[in-house]
Image (tube, rainbow, N blue to C red; front, top):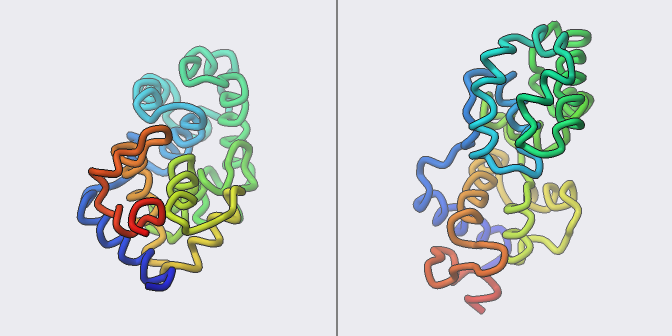
Length: 209
């Protein structure tokens, strides 16, 4: 079985296991997802979802965030960690949205990554979740699982992204990312993966070979 066929089979099996896989970050619009994803860096989604309701209740618009005092934002997001940098990025990001995009979240990766605090991972989360624009999200789980499954030998997220894009059709990029994230959280753990429960174990070089 060649690499493309194996990757396609892995996706098929993961889709069956996680038919409702979607971003777990609670949001009502692109702006909220953008901010929630910035907050999710080095933080659990559960914690972010605890922090965002009061944050979004206080700041309801791009302009609201752009004009916010950093100290006020810091108080609301402190428990997510790195709160000083995150609050600075959130405000700077929203200032950029106001200045360059009419207060709207742009629909291209090239534009999104120009905003403070927005890297390719964050941009692809927003583009894929909101507009179903194809992209590969490389978070810690995707990085770990793609290496473990022998789909890449790279460690740089952007290079991993490029490797995976070559193995699947664009229409499958979003699903593959989110299914790997779910699988990494529920079965293929960093330290003690539960290989006996893994639906793709037979396709994993560490188990199936």
